[in-house]
Length: 274
View 1 (tube, rainbow, N blue to C red):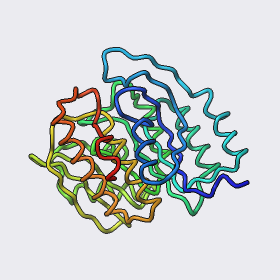
View 2: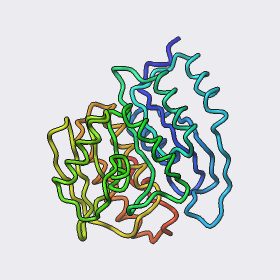
View 3: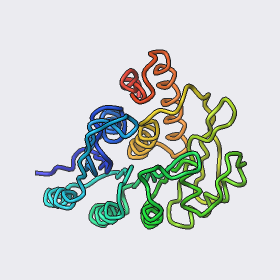
View 4: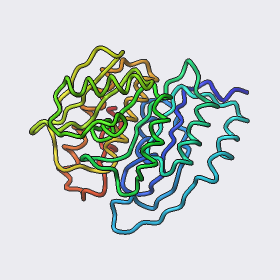
């Protein structure tokens, strides 16, 4: 009996019960895009860390045994998507996972969740950021924001970088391994820009009108759509365009519903249209 008759994406990220982020965002979106989602949790949260309090369990010590069972089943993945990783040990475990399951035929999307607005997240140490550089070479597609792209390349962070600056950063990232990069969420006045760099030489930008404040899970929805589209044979630039427009549409609806900022984006309203 084969377990591999349907396309699957392995998602390595934390599981958060409330707040619409990480695995809780990726799983329904991948499923709606007619791909089986196979989550590997890195930790378990009652609700994400943007709330005043939360319950948290570290899943690191269980991850290898969890992966070994998948290997016994001979599971094969059309895609692998990684998100927030909380320790150097987890980065090493992900590299071990990729050694077990990455092939020349599947795609790996790495979202190097490390920081924003020019700074590391409070939970993220400089050592952990340094270790993330060792994971980047495994990526076929890399989806950093500007802060993360700067950290990975040792570039000074500036909000007003132009296309030549961004191309130079992406060229450095390409030299590390990934050939397809999108620097997401660049603020351009009333718009947000996604800068697409492909094949080490071609770039283009996609603009969407900025709607409301930053909300948790937006990046997870964005990278998940790109991963699922790629597994479904959609071209890279088209997948970024799809993710950008979907996120913009959901943000507009989220603002209409006046949801608290902590509650993420209401992608459920549009899952049947994805």
